[in-house]
Amino acid sequence: MSAKLFVLAGPTAVGKGTVAAAMRDQHPEIYLSVSATTRPPRPGEVDGVHYHFVSVEEFDRLVAEGQMLEWAVVHGVHRYGTPRGPVTEALAAGRPALLEIDLQGARQVRETAPDAVFVFLKPPSWEELVRRLVGRGTEDEEERERRLATAREELAAEAEFDVTIVNREVHSAVEELVSLMVDSSTEL
Ligand code: 5GP
Image (tube, rainbow, N blue to C red; front, side, top):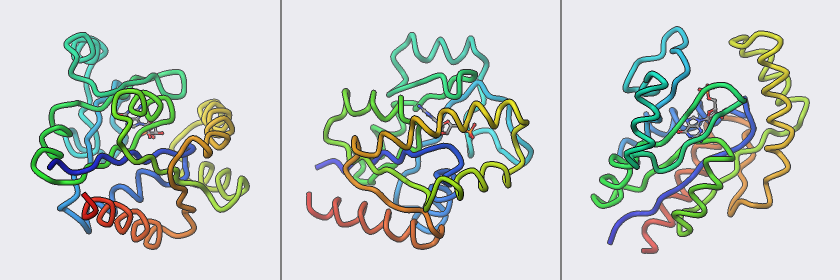
């Protein structure tokens, strides 16, 4: 029987990427999906590891060919999507798989894969979320405002999810996530 699909979503700057990367490093048995994006790489990001960095034309081709499990325009600018093939292969091989995606993407997965488990990662408070977004220093003022506006809407979506994890501290958030993924998988 194939393993279970998990979706990790939550507001911008809550630490989804950090939690997902820490999980991948500590638990290579879990498959972490590598998304495709039209956003240019940030310093230190490696093509094929953090994202598949593709052109708009290439992205559109993948969508047209049905190779995306879900995709969305995030923060009103760049396209992000989950390549379907590697996720299907991991699940078929018995590896639980995790998608770290935005809310629009999570809603699409709910339609196409209703058996997936939806996990909402939440900041300890709104003030802490703002502090993390400013502290990250990777976005300019305009981009920050746009992301905060998105975050406000995203926080309101918690009730749509199966489980909430509060990201007080990366280590314990990873532990919670992994125990959920491992427990749910052994139930199958
Ligand atoms: P960033 O540009 O900071 O790496 O990511 C911006 C947002 O895009 C994050 O909220 C992240 O969850 C979301 N994202 C990353 N990959 C995907 C994807 O494949 N699909 C969707 N829908 N959102 C994604």
